[in-house]
Image 1 (cartoon, rainbow, N blue to C red):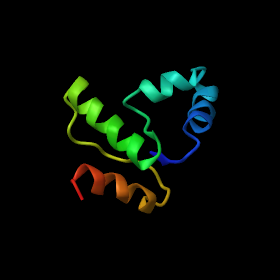
Image 2: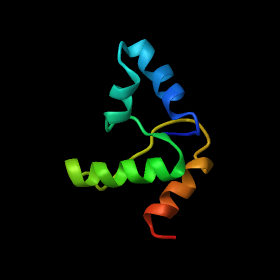
Image 3: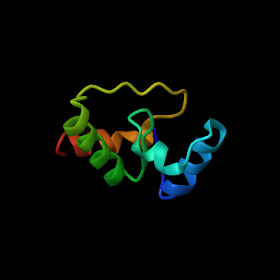
Image 4: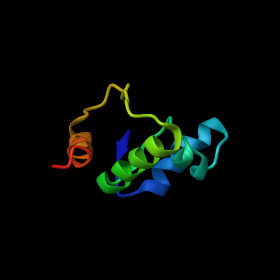
Length: 76
């Protein structure tokens, strides 16, 4: 999960070593990249598409920037 205003660039950076395209990363339920609004919308869409309503973020980075996404999904 990466909160960023440079969604396409970050997705391309994640995709490159995996032999994927940025669009593959953005369409995958295994990556979450974008602004707070984009990430909240992606999670809503994934819940509707795949029925996934529980997410685990497994990274060592500071998750503080992700807190607004949680708040947005909680309706705050």
